[in-house]
Image (cartoon, rainbow, N blue to C red; front, side, top):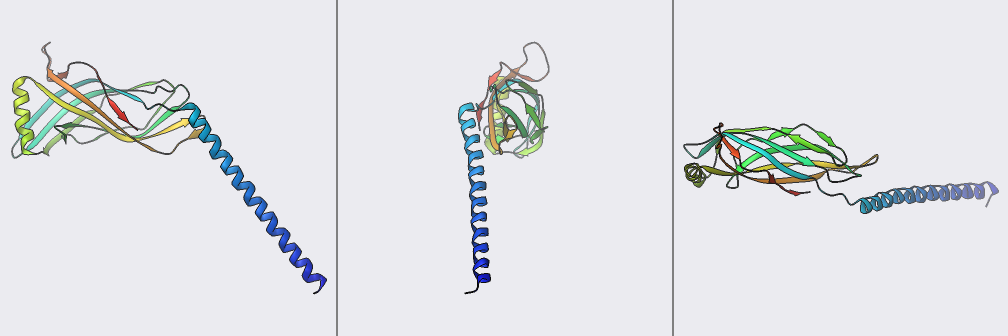
Length: 205
């Protein structure tokens, strides 16, 4: 075998070893970053945000035939970030109302929001729906509750959030919020049915 052929093989072998070293170095670096982020995540242990229904006023909730409902209400929701080292990006939040487990308004989209450490954020969307189809029993239940002077609706929030730790931002997490609201005619003589007391909401992330 010629000296030239041997040199070519040795050169090829050195390149192969160099590529392997580069590959393993890069892989070790990536694993180190992932491990560091995971350890930080475990140490910080992010807590899910706390939602509260502060106010709810129903201006219109009418059953129409055949089996449809028209609704107009305004709600005030608060969200508190309980984390002292983690921020929250709310990339998408859609608020709507349901009655007897059936959606009775169109979703109202809240603009994207960043919530800092221990911050409190308020939103006051108007929810409405015109001739929304419902099951036959829903209209009958609404008539009975209106005659009794109260209505129980549920305000729901469906959306996506991301956690922010320093300069690192997580992927999207689904957030689902449920707020039961007991509303009755305003004893002070105001218009519409109003929420009788603030309500703590259940939050799933």
